[in-house]
Image (cartoon, rainbow, N blue to C red; front, side, top):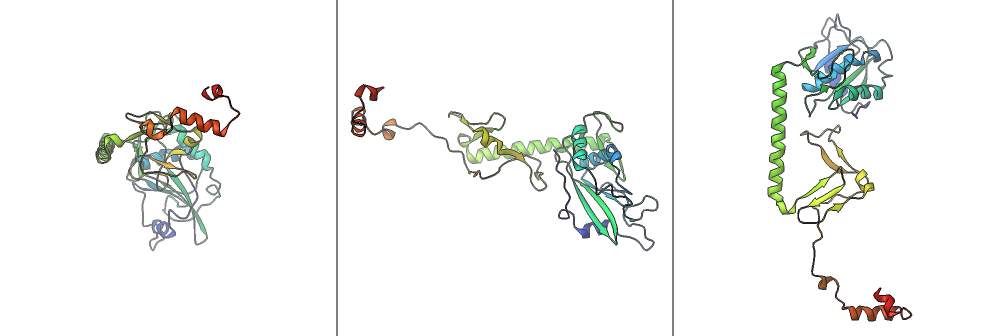
Length: 285
């Protein structure tokens, strides 16, 4: 599920004021661009069109949609209805998840300037490009990939798609190099593999260590920052009161005489001393 929220923390008032900065004639300095789009009001019925824009921003470098700015002339007049305040985040998120993959990360912000109300939806750059349409609707078809060009969202062209695919391949190569370097540093004999699907921790040359199902529920793939990992790689983190350890300790087979120091006769004598009423045959059983 994509994570969305109302907050004034991730986008400061000063950042928003810079977006709606006006010229002497009252028109905005900024124009729509590859990272910015303006709308007069939010309309829940236009979610399909918004989703197309969101995916285009995500496939580029992220972007911002500002509600409360008229089209012609481009003036920060504020929203004329309460639709944005009543935005149904769950429905928008569900629509995005049903029609696009991987998930689109977005946040919602409210601002008020000179008694005028504005709404902002901020879309993060996808770290798992490309974001692809996976279901048809009235605006898009399965397999469509949108990209944000200067002031407009369109189906991606070959040069931009080529760049995305090359970046994805390079990222995978970097991940493999990082993994191999880590293995070389730690030593292959000290590496254990955690299978989060089956709940098994496997170490070469040792028995499998099973993780309790209740514990496994507390081990999830979480993402950093706004729940997005900076380098695009999901990271295992522990929730609740579970304590993380630096290395996996594997119990090795040891000399049984070091573990069990008593002989059978000595052990029998100690048991009989503790339980004198117990028959010798029952003790052996």
